[in-house]
Image (cartoon, rainbow, N blue to C red):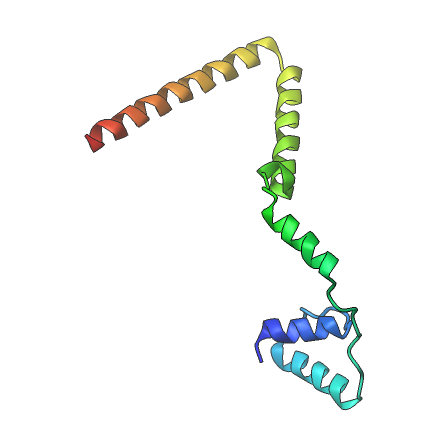
Length: 118
């Protein structure tokens, strides 16, 4: 039995910390559960309505903003803008010049790559 299978079974039996511990200890925990005759929880059967909801969710497009990474990116962007607004004019000017210099270097690098392909 694989570690993932053991984890799933221990979780199914509502065991605390099913993913923690070594494989041999997990096997022993599962064996004790089965030897003691503990029944696994009974779950209600999957309904047709749930199947339709799942099918609908599978067809809906997911954008990056719908994910934790997307939400984190939005937060970081707002923090960057707030930080930029709080710095002195001289620092802003130096930062903008640095960004422009980086953009020019990127464009030159892209041109070089394009020329190398030709």
